[in-house]
Image (cartoon, rainbow, N blue to C red):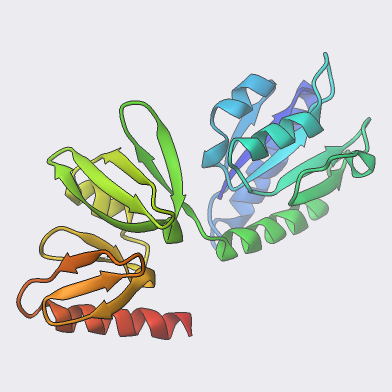
Length: 239
């Protein structure tokens, strides 16, 4: 699990780093290593918020406002838990708290932090992860159900059709794109190098797969049987 500490109190920040290092060592045989990055400014955490599974937050010095920063993180697209560490400021009483806000009291106690990590691990195990793609102008993130299908545009780019009708281009070879989706059970690759999201396959005939938006994808000889089998397996998983 990847965690961020965002605290402009340097002594508190260092103490949280030590506590999380000890917690990580304790969890290596069970839930694995905790990867921790530490930030002391608003600008640094806003630069890379999407890589974290949870953020520990206490920013209230020199004009900083943890609630405003947390809402900026939400606006940037991250929905992970933000754990407000309450010391001089009791964030529980704040207006405009972001969704998925949790709280710890300073000074942070090891037992309470361990309990919080348990909650965060449970959240990570149940959330739908976002897939990261890049092109020349941007990095963008999609949930599994947002990608309808994809196919190579050329040897270095993939054309993406989204479930809401949008079209995007990702800079990736077909092989690397498949590797990005390798942990997602809803995607299947065809011999034509088209990648379909099984969630949106509405019909499979002998030489054609029809998607929910009406798109027809040509199938190679004998490919319909394998696609029907994959579709049945996926539907059983959902059930």
